[in-house]
Length: 323
Image (tube, rainbow, N blue to C red; front, side, top):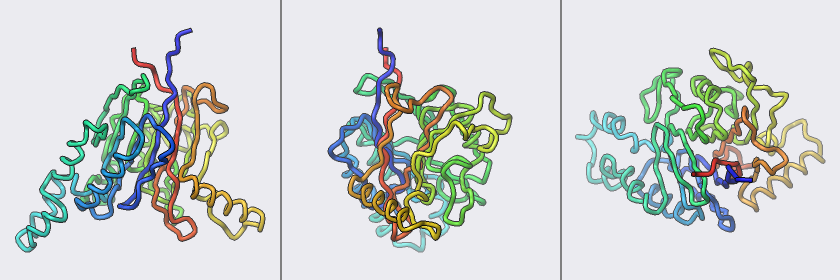
């Protein structure tokens, strides 16, 4: 019988903010994905350091999108912000720290021969070395009440044109209602993004931005998607599964001595291992089926001393074999 799918291994991370990029150096990956905020201050030194680390990951294809901290990659907005004050700045110093307009983008574009691809808004297709075809919809944009910052848009005013049948969606912002709780327990994801993902139903949607939302969820869609989709109406939570979340790793007032120890042991294990693995191929216990999407918030930088760093995600899914 002809095999039409290829099991494909992904290394997924986001929000490393100038710190060490997870390597999982003993594993060979088919694809590595960084969902944005590779820097803290968008300085050229941060980008160059990140590129050096990305090169060391054992993956023939490495996909990166910018995040809101990587602001020099949003060239028109960066230029507009500097225009009113540029005459009052030490321009040589600005250039040495942040580069020329477009320079940060260029150093990534120069690495395409090394398999490093910096993606912006749109759909992209790749032929993988394992024989699979991969289609990716990428978007670096995040919602903002004012929409005046880099890669930001005013809330609900950006349309994500995700095509039906795309394999993987890579965004910086989470969709509304999925792994998007802030520290204040407020939803910070984008409704329009959720709606676009609900209609397209990709195999995998990975993102970051909301560090407190780190985790993964295998979501099952309801048979008929609402005209205005929401996580309340259009996900069948009874047939969905939480794989792991940050809240399952940190201690709470309700923890017993036993449950606190279990969490501590799990944190220590993940710290030593450096990643969380989840596999959803046809031969796995929980295969990814049509009508399901695996959501992954891969923000690496933590928000508490108890869990200062979140592990990266190692994800296996089936992709179509190329002809």
